[in-house]
Image (cartoon, rainbow, N blue to C red; front, side, top):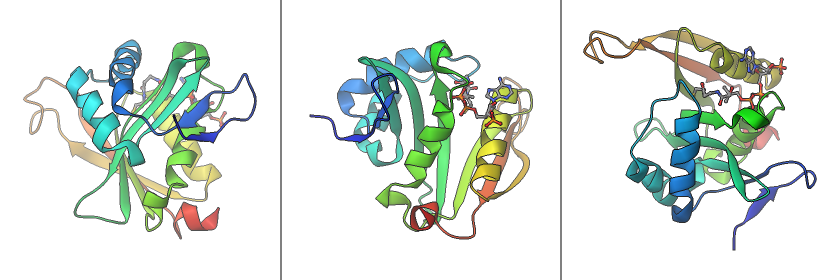
Length: 176
Ligand SMILES: CC(C)(COP(=O)(O)OP(=O)(O)OC[C@H]1O[C@@H](n2cnc3c(N)ncnc32)[C@H](O)[C@@H]1OP(=O)(O)O)[C@@H](O)C(=O)NCCC(=O)NCCS
């Protein structure tokens, strides 16, 4: 039985923690959501199984329509790293990405979290908009700098990923 964390109405996606059985559906969704990097199915399975506390799955009528993967950075217990955000095309522009980020920050695992980090390539307008607006709406301060670099880290095979850091005055979980 899944633990439902929120459901506004029948037509709103239900947000919940993933389970191991969700891994293959998450893998499908991520592959649909260009330009996200594709992972192995096993990677998504491990995220669903071992990192479910810091991942959010959105389900609508039994279909997986949204996904956030993340983890608390092992050396920085005040920092949640958001690895990927994926919203199915049919569910975009309705605030689902924002809702999933809010849900994640409201979890017990984020009790001491005052920083959200993610990486974004320069040309991903939707992703910049999602995180900039999230920072604005939740009273955070956003900064960014080139981090995983095309030549230094990706052997020239992937665009530079900019580390985006959103700092909050206090954990959003406590502010809620
Ligand atoms: C990025 C993504 C997750 C956004 O999901 P979403 O549910 O549509 O986002 P939201 O509806 O919560 O939108 C958040 C804000 O970003 C803005 N936004 C969303 N998509 C945008 C786009 N393509 N261009 C400009 N702004 C955009 C919205 O207008 C909103 O701002 P507002 O509150 O001022 O209206 C979704 O477009 C997606 O899955 N893209 C493909 C995968 C990807 O690039 N993921 C991000 C990298 S980790």
